[in-house]
Length: 149
Image (cartoon, rainbow, N blue to C red):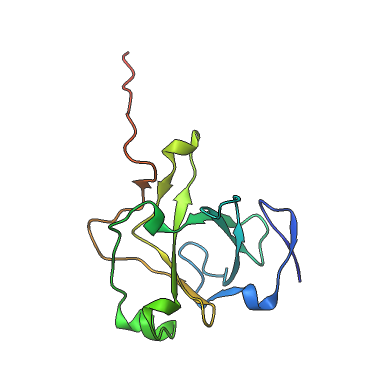
């Protein structure tokens, strides 16, 4: 199947690569089918591309590569909804807010994308944990310079 994308022009995907978000994702309830495409050569960044809307794509990464102490527990209802049998079934991504320069890019740790890689069911889960916010600097602290005026 051919797919028009935001970052990769036209690509060929297989039906079994499509992720299914039963209720869409927050802000896009009608967008229920996405595919993960690599963004860079080392695989550290990817794109979660809508199958239906070429312009809708999110830059994502594994939060564990940047935040080594990132940890959360999924509610039983989410485990059931995604039909998760073990932790080995799970892939977790964080959606990034890409900034210029790239070193200012942030990750949304409050709402990870959870994928059951055995059946491709997926959900963006909003965690109820005060230590996680929607914008965590991916590359550590950046200095903020005040403008005198």
